[in-house]
Length: 178
Image (cartoon, rainbow, N blue to C red; front, side):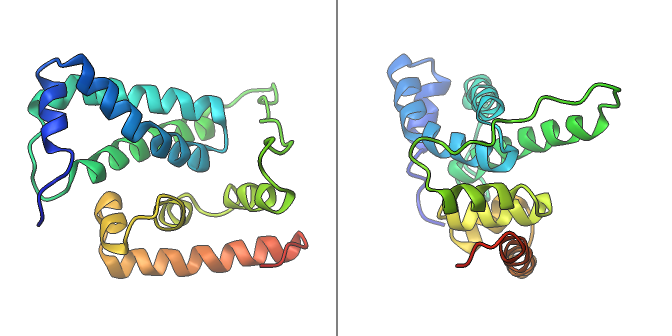
């Protein structure tokens, strides 16, 4: 395994270097926010997950050691675990009141088709969504994505295949063509 490009930066964060914390947040925040937003379908929740991810990094940076996975893989795994915690809580809530629904209007910079694809992502199984987001949106290799998901590359490829088919079905049903 090649040297981890974040290893020295994480060591400095663990030593309490404020400049290192700023650099790490600047380097990782956009990808973590994007990952959480696509997994949760809610920008506010994504911000909360990103904040908790960085709190965990700050708390555990001094004990993090390069092992089988790069730091980038570890931070993605932490973010995904936090997303799954929130998704589980959504299912566990039993109430007579309807939950608040995220504003379905498109983001200012998102085209209508992009918005439909983002909504369709929320309609597929969470593990399939996770695989698609890591590979296509986070631009991880299949090996990196499989490591972040703690599965084999074959299992990842199966999830990707099933996820793409599910997305195609949803988009075809909704009249969006690729």
